[in-house]
Amino acid sequence: MSPLLHHHPPNNDSFTNIVSGFNWESSKKKGGWYNFLIKSIPEIAASGITHVWLPLPSHSASSEGYLPGRLYDLDASQYGTQDELKTLIKEFHSSGIQCVADIVINHRTAERQDSDGRWNIFEGGTPDDRLDWNHSCICIDDITKSGDTTTNSGGTGNPDTGADFNGAPDIDHLNTRVQRELSDWMNWLMTEIGFDGWRFDFARGYSPDITKLYMGNTRPDFAVGEIWNPLSYGSDGKPNYDQDGHRRELMEWVKAVGGSATAFDFTTKGILQAALVEGELWRLKDSNGGPPGMIGLMPENAVTFVDNHDTGSTQKRWPFPSDKVMQGYVYILTHPGIPSIFYDHFFDWGLKEEISNLTMIRIRNGIKASSTVRILASDPDLYVAAIDDKIIAKIGTRYDVGNVVPTTFKIATSGNNYAVWEKQ
Image (tube, rainbow, N blue to C red; front, top):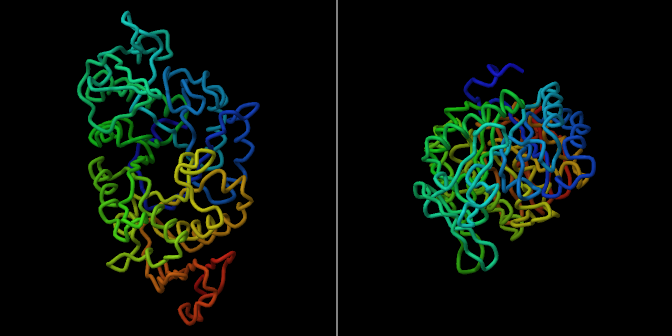
């Protein structure tokens, strides 16, 4: 694929359907994850998937990849070799699927210690000095914690422009060498390895102005940021009904980055799972009568999801209730926004057919990121919404929807506590 094909403005309103191509245990796969995942490409393509999100490809102090060190050293990845990755991406491209790299640039692990015993000498993974940084590229206010031990990496760079990450030195993204060499590395991931876009890990760790700079320097076909902030909670321990402030934080990040980037819609995930857990589906209609998450205000830039390798998988930091996962997919795969399917749910939970039925309904009816929602019912046990007046989705324990669904609509798919109708 010519690198020139990467360099056009993203169109977030064309049909986009993402699958995360890994979980928290994938790096342990015997024979290598890249070699395993390549066998699944026909199934992924047949389900209408347009983008696959792949794990960070570089050397890392942790097998999962989130403590990166020698960024150019792709052969040291626990997921497979550089050649295996290039073969995997080529095969995805042959099936019309774009590949999104996990970009972990907020922090970085050093290769060795300085003369004072501080871990701040970095190695880029090439014979030359690219990405061979020292203390001057670490934020001056950086602190690294391991258990009860707090260490100072000796950073002499600018103060951090975002939230602190305690697991490794926070990189000074105001440093022009850092900006230049990270941009060069990301462009190399495009032109040499074949990646089409980025998922920015821990994007709240640095200013959105920085993300905007990297977006401008690399011009990806698609980019999504992870801005994971907690919802607001009431004294009863439940999320508050009004999460407008939460979704506006996501929107403000997208606007600051420049509008072509997207953000994971953590607001929708949190409200959706709270509504299903508590039997309070009235939460799915905001005070203005629309969806309460980011998709209610800026759907073209919102990536919806049920779970990922952090919230679910073996980490389970904020897992969706397992018996209600399909209701979650009915919501995100019929509603506006850019839906993202979790690897475990698609391949390991026996839900591939049910999820694929939903993706086909979405494609068949031309449901897009900017599609319109008309909420027909939002009771404790019943949520019904018409999308573009082409399909109607229902979730909730109540079986009888009464006369909410017009006779001109016919059942397209149904399952445990859900149904979807198509207009005839």
